[in-house]
Image 1 (cartoon, rainbow, N blue to C red):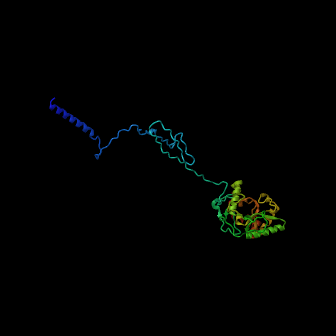
Image 2: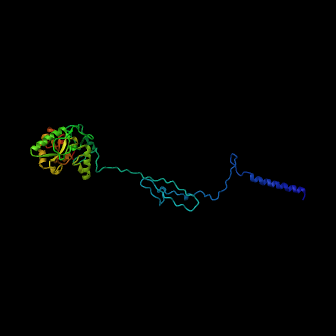
Image 3: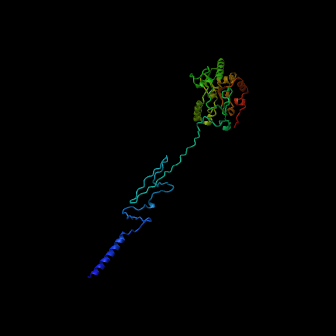
Length: 331
Protein backbone atom coordinates (compact mmCIF):
# COMPACT_ATOMS: atom_id res chain seq x y z
CA UNK A 1 0.00 0.00 0.00
CA UNK A 2 1.35 3.39 -0.90
CA UNK A 3 2.24 6.07 1.59
CA UNK A 4 -0.44 8.40 0.23
CA UNK A 5 -3.14 5.81 0.86
CA UNK A 6 -2.08 5.43 4.50
CA UNK A 7 -2.17 9.16 5.03
CA UNK A 8 -5.69 9.34 3.53
CA UNK A 9 -6.94 6.54 5.77
CA UNK A 10 -5.42 8.21 8.86
CA UNK A 11 -7.07 11.51 7.91
CA UNK A 12 -10.45 9.84 7.63
CA UNK A 13 -10.01 8.17 11.01
CA UNK A 14 -9.10 11.49 12.62
CA UNK A 15 -12.11 13.21 11.08
CA UNK A 16 -14.46 10.44 12.18
CA UNK A 17 -13.00 10.44 15.69
CA UNK A 18 -13.31 14.20 15.94
CA UNK A 19 -16.93 14.10 14.83
CA UNK A 20 -17.72 11.43 17.37
CA UNK A 21 -16.06 13.32 20.21
CA UNK A 22 -17.87 16.53 19.30
CA UNK A 23 -21.22 14.76 19.35
CA UNK A 24 -20.91 13.60 22.97
CA UNK A 25 -19.59 16.84 24.45
CA UNK A 26 -22.17 19.17 22.87
CA UNK A 27 -25.01 20.15 25.47
CA UNK A 28 -28.42 18.74 24.59
CA UNK A 29 -30.43 21.54 26.26
CA UNK A 30 -29.78 24.96 27.76
CA UNK A 31 -31.65 27.63 29.73
CA UNK A 32 -32.36 31.05 28.42
CA UNK A 33 -29.38 32.44 30.34
CA UNK A 34 -27.01 29.87 28.77
CA UNK A 35 -26.52 27.77 31.91
CA UNK A 36 -26.45 24.03 31.50
CA UNK A 37 -29.48 22.04 32.66
CA UNK A 38 -28.50 18.71 34.13
CA UNK A 39 -31.05 16.04 33.34
CA UNK A 40 -31.61 13.60 36.20
CA UNK A 41 -32.09 10.00 35.21
CA UNK A 42 -35.25 8.22 36.45
CA UNK A 43 -34.80 6.79 39.95
CA UNK A 44 -35.85 3.20 39.99
CA UNK A 45 -38.16 2.22 42.85
CA UNK A 46 -39.61 5.74 43.46
CA UNK A 47 -43.41 5.43 43.76
CA UNK A 48 -45.41 7.47 41.28
CA UNK A 49 -47.67 10.34 42.32
CA UNK A 50 -50.67 9.03 44.29
CA UNK A 51 -53.81 8.52 42.34
CA UNK A 52 -56.57 10.91 43.57
CA UNK A 53 -58.90 7.96 43.71
CA UNK A 54 -56.70 6.43 46.41
CA UNK A 55 -56.70 9.53 48.63
CA UNK A 56 -59.16 9.26 51.56
CA UNK A 57 -61.53 12.21 51.74
CA UNK A 58 -64.97 11.06 52.92
CA UNK A 59 -68.27 12.39 51.73
CA UNK A 60 -69.75 15.83 52.41
CA UNK A 61 -72.26 14.55 54.91
CA UNK A 62 -69.58 12.57 56.74
CA UNK A 63 -66.92 15.26 57.15
CA UNK A 64 -64.04 12.81 56.57
CA UNK A 65 -65.55 9.86 58.41
CA UNK A 66 -66.16 6.57 56.62
CA UNK A 67 -68.98 4.29 57.53
CA UNK A 68 -66.85 2.75 60.28
CA UNK A 69 -65.34 5.99 61.54
CA UNK A 70 -65.99 7.16 65.08
CA UNK A 71 -68.57 9.89 65.57
CA UNK A 72 -67.60 12.99 67.53
CA UNK A 73 -68.05 12.70 71.29
CA UNK A 74 -70.20 14.93 73.49
CA UNK A 75 -67.70 17.74 73.86
CA UNK A 76 -67.25 18.07 70.09
CA UNK A 77 -63.87 16.25 69.69
CA UNK A 78 -64.22 13.87 66.76
CA UNK A 79 -62.21 10.69 66.66
CA UNK A 80 -61.23 9.27 63.24
CA UNK A 81 -60.10 5.70 63.05
CA UNK A 82 -57.05 5.09 60.79
CA UNK A 83 -57.75 3.53 57.36
CA UNK A 84 -56.06 0.18 56.70
CA UNK A 85 -53.14 0.81 54.26
CA UNK A 86 -53.33 -1.09 50.94
CA UNK A 87 -50.42 -3.33 49.85
CA UNK A 88 -48.73 -0.82 47.56
CA UNK A 89 -45.64 1.33 47.49
CA UNK A 90 -47.82 4.39 47.03
CA UNK A 91 -47.86 6.58 50.14
CA UNK A 92 -51.21 6.89 51.94
CA UNK A 93 -52.28 10.50 52.08
CA UNK A 94 -54.51 10.98 55.11
CA UNK A 95 -56.80 14.00 54.92
CA UNK A 96 -56.92 16.51 57.71
CA UNK A 97 -60.28 15.89 59.34
CA UNK A 98 -61.99 18.93 60.75
CA UNK A 99 -64.30 17.75 63.56
CA UNK A 100 -67.92 18.68 63.20
CA UNK A 101 -68.62 20.78 66.26
CA UNK A 102 -72.22 20.56 67.27
CA UNK A 103 -73.33 23.86 68.84
CA UNK A 104 -74.18 23.53 72.49
CA UNK A 105 -77.73 24.66 72.98
CA UNK A 106 -78.30 26.13 76.41
CA UNK A 107 -81.89 25.55 77.46
CA UNK A 108 -83.85 28.49 78.67
CA UNK A 109 -84.50 27.80 82.28
CA UNK A 110 -87.97 28.72 83.26
CA UNK A 111 -88.42 28.11 86.95
CA UNK A 112 -91.65 26.35 87.51
CA UNK A 113 -91.08 25.54 91.11
CA UNK A 114 -88.92 28.24 92.39
CA UNK A 115 -89.81 31.92 91.84
CA UNK A 116 -87.37 34.77 91.65
CA UNK A 117 -87.04 37.25 94.49
CA UNK A 118 -88.17 39.96 92.10
CA UNK A 119 -91.60 38.90 90.80
CA UNK A 120 -92.64 40.55 87.57
CA UNK A 121 -96.35 39.87 87.75
CA UNK A 122 -99.03 40.04 90.33
CA UNK A 123 -100.26 36.50 89.81
CA UNK A 124 -102.26 34.55 92.29
CA UNK A 125 -105.78 33.27 92.30
CA UNK A 126 -108.43 35.94 92.14
CA UNK A 127 -105.95 38.49 90.90
CA UNK A 128 -105.40 39.62 87.33
CA UNK A 129 -103.02 42.03 85.77
CA UNK A 130 -99.49 41.88 84.37
CA UNK A 131 -96.07 42.83 85.61
CA UNK A 132 -96.74 46.54 84.99
CA UNK A 133 -99.29 46.53 87.85
CA UNK A 134 -96.64 45.74 90.47
CA UNK A 135 -95.47 48.86 92.27
CA UNK A 136 -92.99 49.52 95.05
CA UNK A 137 -94.39 51.09 98.20
CA UNK A 138 -93.36 54.74 98.30
CA UNK A 139 -93.30 54.88 102.12
CA UNK A 140 -92.46 51.39 103.38
CA UNK A 141 -91.79 52.70 106.89
CA UNK A 142 -95.36 54.00 107.26
CA UNK A 143 -97.49 52.19 109.85
CA UNK A 144 -100.34 52.15 107.34
CA UNK A 145 -98.36 50.96 104.30
CA UNK A 146 -100.25 48.71 101.88
CA UNK A 147 -98.29 45.58 100.98
CA UNK A 148 -99.94 42.92 98.86
CA UNK A 149 -99.65 41.24 95.47
CA UNK A 150 -99.77 44.62 93.75
CA UNK A 151 -97.58 46.63 96.10
CA UNK A 152 -94.20 45.35 97.21
CA UNK A 153 -91.52 46.55 99.59
CA UNK A 154 -88.12 47.85 98.43
CA UNK A 155 -85.54 45.12 97.91
CA UNK A 156 -84.44 43.60 101.23
CA UNK A 157 -86.31 46.23 103.23
CA UNK A 158 -85.88 45.95 106.99
CA UNK A 159 -87.47 48.25 109.60
CA UNK A 160 -85.00 50.06 111.85
CA UNK A 161 -87.14 49.96 115.01
CA UNK A 162 -87.65 46.23 115.56
CA UNK A 163 -88.05 45.10 119.17
CA UNK A 164 -89.15 41.99 121.06
CA UNK A 165 -92.73 42.42 122.32
CA UNK A 166 -93.25 41.23 125.89
CA UNK A 167 -95.81 38.56 125.04
CA UNK A 168 -95.63 34.74 125.01
CA UNK A 169 -94.67 32.92 121.82
CA UNK A 170 -94.77 29.24 121.04
CA UNK A 171 -90.97 29.25 121.29
CA UNK A 172 -88.66 30.81 123.84
CA UNK A 173 -85.75 31.88 121.65
CA UNK A 174 -85.31 35.56 120.83
CA UNK A 175 -85.00 35.19 117.11
CA UNK A 176 -86.05 37.10 114.02
CA UNK A 177 -89.65 35.93 113.87
CA UNK A 178 -90.30 37.13 117.42
CA UNK A 179 -89.60 40.77 116.55
CA UNK A 180 -92.01 43.56 115.63
CA UNK A 181 -91.84 47.28 115.08
CA UNK A 182 -91.94 49.22 118.33
CA UNK A 183 -95.43 50.74 117.96
CA UNK A 184 -96.98 47.47 116.82
CA UNK A 185 -95.21 45.59 119.63
CA UNK A 186 -96.64 47.92 122.30
CA UNK A 187 -100.15 47.53 120.87
CA UNK A 188 -99.73 43.74 120.79
CA UNK A 189 -98.84 43.71 124.49
CA UNK A 190 -102.08 45.55 125.27
CA UNK A 191 -104.07 43.16 123.08
CA UNK A 192 -102.63 40.08 124.81
CA UNK A 193 -103.29 41.57 128.24
CA UNK A 194 -106.92 42.29 127.35
CA UNK A 195 -107.43 38.78 125.98
CA UNK A 196 -105.97 37.30 129.16
CA UNK A 197 -108.46 39.28 131.25
CA UNK A 198 -111.22 37.72 129.17
CA UNK A 199 -109.84 34.27 129.84
CA UNK A 200 -108.30 33.84 126.39
CA UNK A 201 -104.62 33.00 126.43
CA UNK A 202 -102.88 33.89 123.19
CA UNK A 203 -99.42 33.12 121.88
CA UNK A 204 -97.39 34.44 119.00
CA UNK A 205 -96.46 32.11 116.16
CA UNK A 206 -94.49 34.28 113.75
CA UNK A 207 -93.95 38.03 113.45
CA UNK A 208 -91.18 39.79 111.50
CA UNK A 209 -89.75 37.88 108.58
CA UNK A 210 -86.84 39.01 106.40
CA UNK A 211 -87.01 38.76 102.63
CA UNK A 212 -84.46 35.95 102.59
CA UNK A 213 -86.54 33.95 105.06
CA UNK A 214 -89.69 34.58 103.03
CA UNK A 215 -87.87 33.40 99.91
CA UNK A 216 -86.93 30.13 101.57
CA UNK A 217 -90.41 29.53 102.96
CA UNK A 218 -92.16 30.37 99.70
CA UNK A 219 -89.87 28.12 97.70
CA UNK A 220 -90.60 25.27 100.10
CA UNK A 221 -94.33 25.78 99.66
CA UNK A 222 -93.93 25.84 95.89
CA UNK A 223 -92.06 22.55 95.95
CA UNK A 224 -94.77 21.01 98.08
CA UNK A 225 -97.95 22.41 96.49
CA UNK A 226 -96.92 24.08 93.24
CA UNK A 227 -96.62 27.81 92.66
CA UNK A 228 -100.25 28.51 91.81
CA UNK A 229 -101.51 27.07 95.08
CA UNK A 230 -98.62 28.47 97.12
CA UNK A 231 -99.54 31.98 96.03
CA UNK A 232 -102.99 31.60 97.62
CA UNK A 233 -101.54 31.36 101.11
CA UNK A 234 -97.94 32.60 100.95
CA UNK A 235 -96.54 35.86 99.65
CA UNK A 236 -93.96 36.11 96.93
CA UNK A 237 -90.72 37.48 98.45
CA UNK A 238 -90.92 41.25 98.82
CA UNK A 239 -94.72 41.16 99.05
CA UNK A 240 -95.07 39.79 102.57
CA UNK A 241 -96.63 41.84 105.36
CA UNK A 242 -94.42 40.01 107.82
CA UNK A 243 -91.45 41.88 106.33
CA UNK A 244 -93.01 45.18 107.44
CA UNK A 245 -92.72 44.16 111.11
CA UNK A 246 -96.39 45.09 111.51
CA UNK A 247 -97.98 41.64 111.12
CA UNK A 248 -98.08 38.61 113.41
CA UNK A 249 -99.65 35.16 113.36
CA UNK A 250 -101.51 34.23 116.55
CA UNK A 251 -102.63 30.97 118.14
CA UNK A 252 -103.63 29.67 121.55
CA UNK A 253 -100.88 28.86 124.04
CA UNK A 254 -101.37 25.16 123.36
CA UNK A 255 -100.25 25.70 119.77
CA UNK A 256 -103.09 23.64 118.34
CA UNK A 257 -104.13 24.67 114.83
CA UNK A 258 -101.36 27.29 114.73
CA UNK A 259 -101.50 28.97 111.31
CA UNK A 260 -103.92 26.32 110.09
CA UNK A 261 -107.47 26.48 108.83
CA UNK A 262 -108.74 24.67 111.93
CA UNK A 263 -107.90 27.81 113.94
CA UNK A 264 -111.12 29.33 112.59
CA UNK A 265 -113.96 29.06 115.09
CA UNK A 266 -111.71 28.63 118.13
CA UNK A 267 -112.23 30.94 121.08
CA UNK A 268 -108.93 32.63 120.30
CA UNK A 269 -109.97 33.30 116.70
CA UNK A 270 -113.38 34.58 117.76
CA UNK A 271 -111.86 36.92 120.33
CA UNK A 272 -109.44 38.37 117.78
CA UNK A 273 -112.25 38.97 115.29
CA UNK A 274 -114.24 40.88 117.91
CA UNK A 275 -111.53 42.86 119.71
CA UNK A 276 -108.37 43.18 117.58
CA UNK A 277 -109.48 46.49 116.08
CA UNK A 278 -109.65 48.04 119.55
CA UNK A 279 -105.86 47.81 119.65
CA UNK A 280 -105.19 48.90 116.09
CA UNK A 281 -105.13 45.44 114.49
CA UNK A 282 -107.26 43.94 111.72
CA UNK A 283 -107.84 40.42 110.43
CA UNK A 284 -105.87 41.09 107.28
CA UNK A 285 -107.28 38.28 105.12
CA UNK A 286 -110.95 37.92 106.08
CA UNK A 287 -113.26 35.20 104.93
CA UNK A 288 -114.90 35.63 101.53
CA UNK A 289 -112.43 38.30 100.36
CA UNK A 290 -109.90 36.17 98.51
CA UNK A 291 -110.76 37.77 95.17
CA UNK A 292 -109.65 41.10 96.66
CA UNK A 293 -106.75 40.22 98.93
CA UNK A 294 -105.46 37.37 96.78
CA UNK A 295 -105.18 35.09 99.84
CA UNK A 296 -107.45 32.58 101.45
CA UNK A 297 -109.05 33.23 104.84
CA UNK A 298 -106.46 33.48 107.61
CA UNK A 299 -108.11 34.19 110.97
CA UNK A 300 -104.72 33.97 112.72
CA UNK A 301 -102.97 36.71 110.69
CA UNK A 302 -103.42 40.17 112.18
CA UNK A 303 -101.89 43.40 110.94
CA UNK A 304 -101.31 46.66 112.80
CA UNK A 305 -102.70 49.76 111.01
CA UNK A 306 -103.66 51.98 113.95
CA UNK A 307 -106.92 52.19 115.84
CA UNK A 308 -108.67 54.60 113.49
CA UNK A 309 -108.23 52.57 110.33
CA UNK A 310 -108.69 49.28 112.16
CA UNK A 311 -112.07 50.28 113.53
CA UNK A 312 -113.24 51.59 110.15
CA UNK A 313 -112.20 48.38 108.39
CA UNK A 314 -113.76 46.19 111.08
CA UNK A 315 -117.04 48.07 111.29
CA UNK A 316 -117.51 48.12 107.53
CA UNK A 317 -116.43 44.54 107.07
CA UNK A 318 -113.98 45.50 104.35
CA UNK A 319 -110.37 44.84 103.52
CA UNK A 320 -107.40 47.17 103.61
CA UNK A 321 -107.50 47.23 99.79
CA UNK A 322 -111.10 48.40 99.87
CA UNK A 323 -110.29 50.99 102.50
CA UNK A 324 -107.60 52.47 100.24
CA UNK A 325 -109.77 51.99 97.16
CA UNK A 326 -106.98 49.84 95.74
CA UNK A 327 -109.05 46.89 94.63
CA UNK A 328 -107.47 44.78 91.89
CA UNK A 329 -109.44 43.71 88.86
CA UNK A 330 -111.13 40.43 89.71
CA UNK A 331 -111.13 37.48 87.32
